[in-house]
Length: 454
Ligand code: ADP
Image (cartoon, rainbow, N blue to C red; front, side):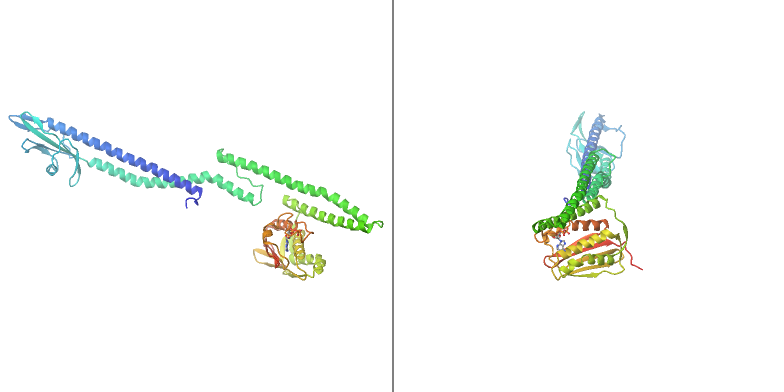
């Protein structure tokens, strides 16, 4: 469970545990030291009382006399005995205590009375002239008991209070110190979502985390520059290749038009022409993708009629559909309006329907359907063609990826990358489901910035 805890909670727990251990150890030490010092004071008082009382016993006129000159307090008791055990003098609120405890000279003993604890000390038999006396003193432990119980009460309230303060303080300190890390995680999430322009907010404090933030931001700036350079290179290269391919195509066409060209040469020239077309298609698609990703593709959002676009696409592909005897069914409401760029939306459907024809079976079926509610517009293009191998599904939106190059030699592997970019440019999401030999369905969801006609 501890392993699965968040770092902030772990730090708080550690901080609180250490604070409580430190306070508990300090409290124990304080308690035992106080107890030891108070005990020492009581024993010293008992010893002194014993000495003072013994010094006041005198032998006068053949008998022992005792006159106390020391001010008496309720916190002490004494009992002075003659040789035969008879009482010479006594003082205290409960001197019967001395009868209950046998004599043990020189030894400190703690004795309980009804309402107090007493420290008892007996003297050894002391000769006074021709006689012998014994002195017993009892010093009240009330002060010691009170001080120690007050200390225990302070600890009882103080330790839980310190624990709460440590918990709250530890939580705030951990939260505050880990704040830059949370920001780094948040920014990293945005960056891994594809936005390389995101930066971690700079910390005004130049500690280790501040340094880490600066280093990561510097690294991101470098990565963004290299990505931009790479995109720029692809875009520039495509642009530069356009003219030579157009020239090659023009020369090939003019050679094909010449009467002197032999049939054998015509076959080669026709192949060249096909390859030029293929190259031109790649160049145009690459330009669309790179310009789109760089944000340099000019598009204009307007209210477009989805059904009209689908009908246009069906017309464009009419020959290809007829060639494979594939039927195209449009199930799109005539009044469905979408806020989108007309030419990009046409490009999207052209690509999806072209793939559905290319990878469809002869006499197959293609369904383009759409539905909408207050929040979104759903569009799906479904075919009952050859399907996509399960292993290839995660890659089909990658640039130049083609699942089955053996069966299809005409594709560029760029069509779905363009489709994906168009969907993202319109803040939508695209999803594909496919079963080999059963067919493929592309589902697109756009946020509903659309309205119904009339
Ligand atoms: P291509 O120019 O090869 O069609 P795309 O990017 O449009 O490039 O598609 C990538 C690959 O995804 C295709 O080569 C094909 O293997 C697979 N694919 C796309 N659409 C379909 C479909 N409707 N049915 C089967 N496979 C498809």
